Length: 213
Figure 1 (cartoon, rainbow, N blue to C red):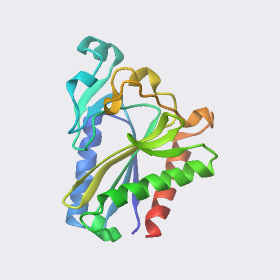
Figure 2 (cartoon, helix red, strand yellow; figure 1 turned 60 degrees about the vertical axis):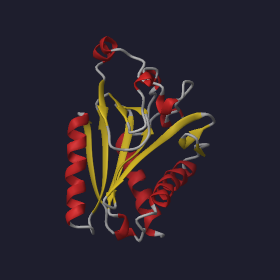
Figure 3 (tube, rainbow, N blue to C red; figure 1 turned 120 degrees about the vertical axis):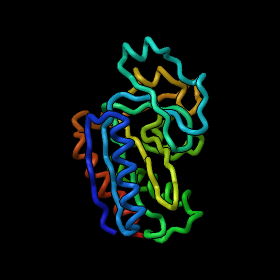
Figure 4 (spheres, rainbow, N blue to C red; figure 1 turned 90 degrees about the vertical axis):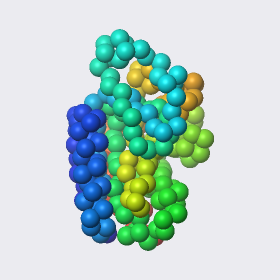
């Protein structure tokens, strides 16, 4: 499969969701299509199907002052934050076209995580895999988050790599329901790391990871 890479930066969350759904419909109509949607959205707290309101720590006044929107998403999981300084990558593809069965969602996610693990390891980042919560970590700090949805055999949502410091915003939630959650960032290891260069490297690593199935 040849993935089409699409990039949208400084995009409002509702526009990102609309774009993602448009691409998902295209794959539904033609299962041989595959998209890697990269974005750097405007500040947004998102909550998945297993979230609780108690894990949103900022009230409406603080959200307004910080210019952070709140949005429900169709993925699993709980609360997280997305915004500037993050690289979001959504693989939108029919699992069957990659050789996966309808019950292979976990294997799909694991290949996605391994692709990022391999790339970060090549860059010399001391990253490790953890499953509770699921992600890639440097020590106890999360560097890459994952949250995917699968509907009609098509994947959506995906991963977020923290390029620059995200700590000020993560203080507004209990991400994944965890009160002592800490995040790392790639620029702590590569201060001059460029968003576009990193996004292209992620795309190449993901494409390579799925080609070796």
